[in-house]
Length: 400
Image (cartoon, rainbow, N blue to C red):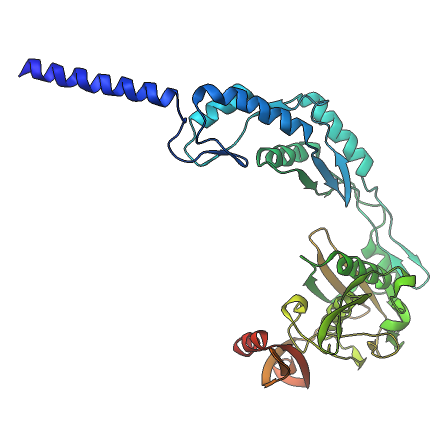
């Protein structure tokens, strides 16, 4: 029996050696293993290092862009000593427990950090004191620059993931000597009356540009007591000659293309902030259409402008106010209103779909009622009708 046992052990050892020999000359893993987009499953162990040498050569020949504040900078991989660590990456492949392998890189840390510090100096936004210029407040600006250590982490992570670019964000450091709140105090508007925010994420490039440009035009605007504000008067025609770009616009309820497309998001965001205050809305128009691409506010809470045709106008009868509008680094548009008196109003809103009516093929007319409540009591109610898709009309009917 003991002899039989020895025979079985010997056979098992022989089988193990045979399997080890097979594995050592074939794929390092039976499961699918990837390095970036490269499938390594059919490579022999002996083929890994030559293959990684080719990968490294190809990677070094490809540009890697570092973006800061919409500016692109070429990351000089070779000059900074960046290269694939072939031995360590091969080991990571052989020991991989997940389908995707993270490569290992070598680089010159001192040279890389020095390059990033130079980039930080080149892209730094210096501190700027707040001031008043005519009928506008120029906001104070805290010094902003990239953090070299954090930037190195983001670049390394992006490279490990096989990306060809990375975007670095600025972080605040040194504050201005005089901030915006101090200037607001000086002109007698120290109270934040209301603020409203909408998303510009995934916006078409032209629309985002137009939103930013229109927001900058009204940013810091001082509106004296009982003075009528006209959006068209302040912003103008928003045409090609005014520096605006082509972007989606509504024409008879359907999305088309025209110069200035996107500025209605600034108007709508301003409108929603004003609804939280004592502002008197003199003129407001809904869009002719309402679609998922433009649903940055609920139906009935939008405001459209078209120079010479539709305007957005309001006034504050009892106090002077300041309007601020900006798109931040996260592509969120914020409109805030500051005034002379504290705002104690408690406003809320209700949107109701009243009816949907079939229009042209695949389209429907959607009628909604918007009610503004103050301290729980109805203050204002109005109806708007939009052209939209039948599918979206159904979705909205189930939502509101």
